Image: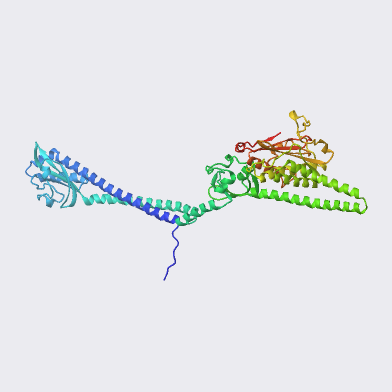
Length: 574
């Protein structure tokens, strides 16, 4: 027959048993030590008491005089009994040098031989011994009676061992009560402590706690999502490897306050918030992360559990998907427009107006080919060239003319492999999209914010930038976006200028923050991603006013290895 295996005792139960045994052992040890010490002290006290009595009797003049009398017992017996009763000792025996008793508590023993040792006393010494006499085992002191230098008698005073034991037993009762009280108090205290320990360990035993710790450590290192736990004082109580990587923290992050981590202000606010946050998008210097927070209520202090998910690549892919979707729509529109133009050419031919049909078709081809030749001739980098052509078609769909500045030039191989194509698409694509939106709104009569003031608050037009066409006439004509792409020896210059309304001076400092947008909720991620990509490549981004009053964004990215190793990312807002 097999018996079911019982679950091991919980850690709290094991500690409780061990502590109870330990307290009991300590109390028992203390009680034994107190008993032994009390017994020894009682014996020492009894010895001092009988020694004092024996010496006092031996030195008494009446005793020396009685020892010379023919019948010493007649005088000494009453005296000895009186001393015995007054001092509380068991017996006082006065005897001759020949060990014949002159006094004894039992008068029938007077005249008999003293039971005990007297040799040392006959040599003139006072000594103590434990000896079993007529009254049983006793602690006795024997001292000589001197009369003019001659020993005329001996005095033995003693107290029985039973009497000493009875005194110790009386003390032992009080000691037992004290020991019992200490044991009960220790047991109660141990129970209270272990009840609290059981509550905190949830009744688990040592093996279960060890296994949970191993799982805990393995989970922290295995989970790809960042995990962050804050205590009630908003300090980092726990963080895994992914959390350190996503937030850019070092190994000393544990125990630091969130406010001291130098994270972006919106992210710091989300981590410090007392309410729950669900799937909030935040930007760090290099990443786009999704933050979820949940407050923890219970225990001694409140805390917060934070999970972090890396959405950097997902956001970049989403941006590329939006661009592809825009290209698709632009191509669909161009296909529809091309069909209309083809029908026009066919109709002209059917009407016999061949020359007009040829002229119409040639003009359309020249218009489309001009931009393509301009872009391909100036920008040899295929990714940027494809981006510009696609954005030109997309801008044309919105009624905006996209123009490549005359001084634009990027030779084939001018851009290093260390400069990611995806970052170039993120930077230039988002800047062009924002510029197209701004120019389109201004051309369709949208609200026009105040122009960005010049020095000392005076509104004045800025001089045109070399290579950029004057954008002022576009205010009354077609909306325009001008792009400059120039690769020099040390840096790549990307500049996007629009004919829109510009940036309100009050919004200029926050224009690169996540969530800033003039298009309502759910927007405001593009310029934040631009700043992130620029920071990732150690470049700079500047915002100022263009020649026609619209916004002008200028990005400079280092092309040399030395410059790319320096952190020089600052947003200069003019």
